[in-house]
Length: 245
Image: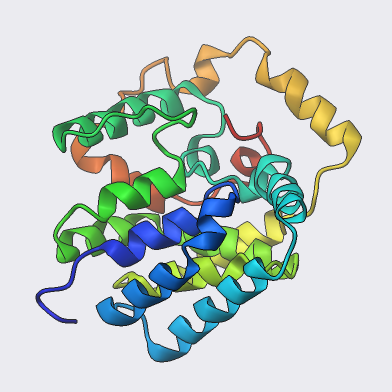
């Protein structure tokens, strides 16, 4: 990897993972240029991203938006909010997000979006501002969750899977195969039924049991180990809780 490389590749992948808008489709030419000039990703991977961009441009924007909502909003196991896959709706997730937001603020960033700090495109934008080695280290901390989401997207035969393959390639370590197989076996990423969505909605507003949320006895995650907690086993119960905030 070149020593003069920046993290624009990560920012671009996050940009492509955001809700589809005309601006994303119109920026495809500039996206290609940056990806090829930065050369963080391999030539075959960049070619796959070119194909992804061409496929996006060839579809109606309303169809793209409908597909996006079905995938990332209505399927909790595909949520782009990373801590949801680790903490579910427990209070630990809220505290972890406070810690992550603190890291953003240390960089002079302020979250003015509707998303929580663990939203993957936002996390990638933060990483793009770090030195490349540090960005890769932090990306490594999330690679198991990223691989699980990508694997589920492949089972859904979604073109978005290539973006997660690209993030895996950008990281400096491979995902834990044992964790990945367990996560995919527990929840392959299928769309929720109407009954399951209703149950998840009701559960979201249920009173929490302190004994189960870590209030009793357990300490809050610290800044220094928070990102490392992304490598915790992907609990099937967490993957089934709640939709994106």
